[in-house]
Image (cartoon, rainbow, N blue to C red; front, side):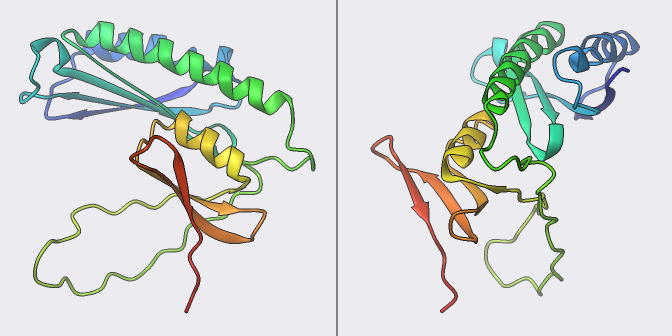
Length: 189
């Protein structure tokens, strides 16, 4: 079985040669992790990049069992950016598989225990800064250690929102200026 590859170009034209190259290379990710059924490939060219060698950007996103694996690479050539992003994704898959071989302790699978995000009706926009993008994603129950791992896998360097199985609440894990992490445990007040 090959992986379904969804290719999106942002302000660039994707040649047939590049599309075929991506489908061939990315389509083989299920050899590393059979749970991957679809990989999203986002391609863009940043004209404002400081270095000309960082203008071609490739981002790969895979969701095995509810976990999100993401890699991004920037180079001067789109084909080499694809190769480098694939190498990084393969390393993340190996790390992911190693963590999950040890098990969760209670036998529950993180992906199967996921909760669906609720859709909220938009409110009228106030004067001032506007919300220009909304994201919905499923939040799976996890421990604080799993949240730290997921934050690293996603390469989120600022914050990560998760459902804490220890407290049965939504928590926010964030990076502190001193290099450590903080945890916000919201309370309805």
